[in-house]
Image 1 (cartoon, rainbow, N blue to C red):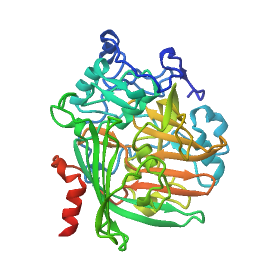
Image 2 (cartoon, one colour; image 1 turned 180 degrees about the vertical axis):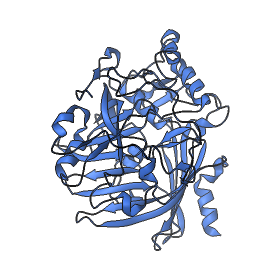
Image 3 (tube, rainbow, N blue to C red; image 1 turned 60 degrees about the vertical axis):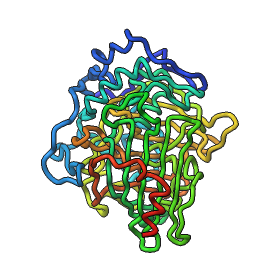
Length: 450
């Protein structure tokens, strides 16, 4: 295969920051979503040498075998890797690797490597998402400097993005079921190679933009709401957190926390941005959860362009493994993590003037077919690579969609790892929509009183 990086020269999307508002595309331009582009904006065709195939609709049918709720525990299990990327041969593949992946190859040369498999474009979306994405292309726009949205609902807001902030909105409003429940573990990898269970939790997530029949006028603008309860360790069991996020900058994140020791619910306005994530014992920041989690307004977002990269993909087998098998001392077990060649959008985030963030510069790489973040590189105030994140997306035909929960955040300077929302030995189910009153501080307080 060709090992050179392919950068697509799209003049209209280069070097655009998030300060102005961006308008919807024309009706003529939107027609590409019915021809050269997939319904959510990826290039339908494969690449020139055939190492990336044509998109043919993704996986929508049920997959037999072991399941973790609605997650198939195995996918392409009989395939063998095409090749392995190691520290010894990484120069051959350099242009296909993020800086964070290169750093991990260098840091753990004896244990970290990439098993690269044939590329499968498995991403699928419900028909309602395809229909809404086409409508959004000509009606959705950013306002308030790019940090709020208008005219969107039901699907990818910017299937033909012109700016980095639009790509990030595509991630925040990525395809999900209207309502899901799952359980997860947060695991801290310590500098001596030992692991600590920070918490085990169950969680309910709701995504109102995917309610049946939703329109821009009927949608409140709240795009994600969740409520979780801590199950382990015993001294934290019973603690709870509720969060609601909106597309309107004037309606910022609402959060409530129930603390077992205080036996009361309190508002938690600092559960955002670069606040250390107490659910993971502070081993990562809140906005590193699921690749990126929360408001966009601390950064300016520059769309660098599109390129081919090796990224974690189709990792149902990794999710379906045991915890002991899935994680090694300092990273995930490379024998279980599947990497594939895909086209990604590259977005550079730089802390905005007058704002602050512990990680003042980040580079995000997002899969073109699903709009999921695959990799993140984070730099300190002196411009040194500090943090590297990788996600492990998996297929959920019950939605249908590619989903992203587990994220591994590596602190390259402290030699630590945070595994956020590990799904091994857990479950994820698509469930009926709950009353939105379930996702309130009052509801948590009422349950705690019982």
